Image (cartoon, rainbow, N blue to C red; front, top):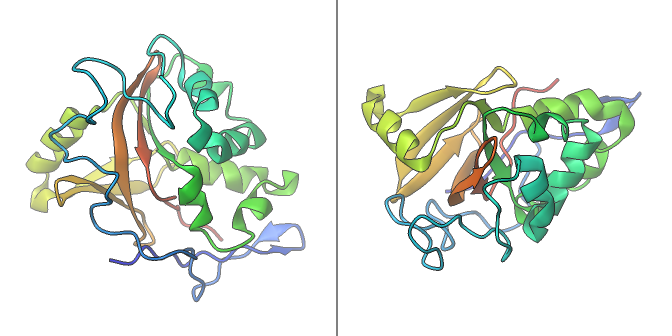
Length: 213
């Protein structure tokens, strides 16, 4: 399965343009069940029962909020930079609760060259916030919650309404959790159930995108 996107962002007259022919991925296709992704019913091997999973080799403190824990994870540094540029750090430090599908640094490299730099420009702050809030769902949804809801959903496809307002489709594929955005791009959960004081984070291997234009 190929992880593609029709997003092509370019700075023209201080705005972002959407191009249907561009591909967001510059690296080989992501498999349906990435090697780093554990089966949906299992905890990561290095995680003791009941313990919070490590992210990027760093322990995550379940008593701290999402913004604080993300800042401590080396493999989420691009996301943290984007959150700060979009002015969302205070929100993600607030009471929530939130469920965040957090893309890794590698996930951002799959976007078209120059996309991240363009999004980080001050004039594109609103668009950046739109992309980031598309990765956030109100409330706390653990892996078990997601599995239960997907199995009960028609056709095994759960539609989650994001904070951005558009839906993400969630399915169980190859023993793992697959996200499909409104453009048809797919992302997969690598590390589920990273508990936070204001919700839960599921680390994912791709950036999902809302409709932009």
